[in-house]
Image (tube, rainbow, N blue to C red; front, side, top):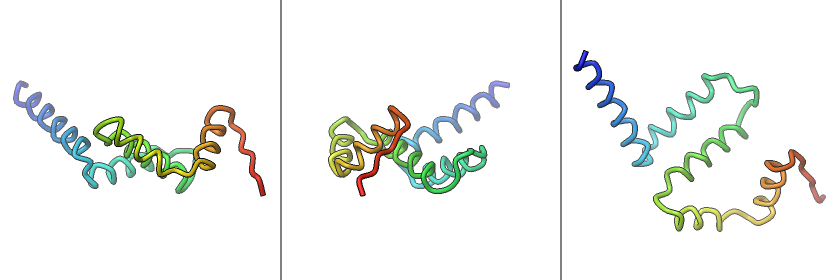
Length: 93
């Protein structure tokens, strides 16, 4: 029983190490699990949102997150904010 618990703890710690290190394998595994869960939203948009979430979580500190955010065009950021807060999207064409 103790051996089984030790193996489970070891496996969990290895997974945490992979995630903290930002390994590509952990990101791919995470993406695969999302598809296996059968989300009602199909395709790339959900995957991109989950990849962004993972990228933000893997940033070591707020300065790195701020640097990543600064690379996002203001119009894109505002559209995402509006959509997440209100569910509406206004396009200016």
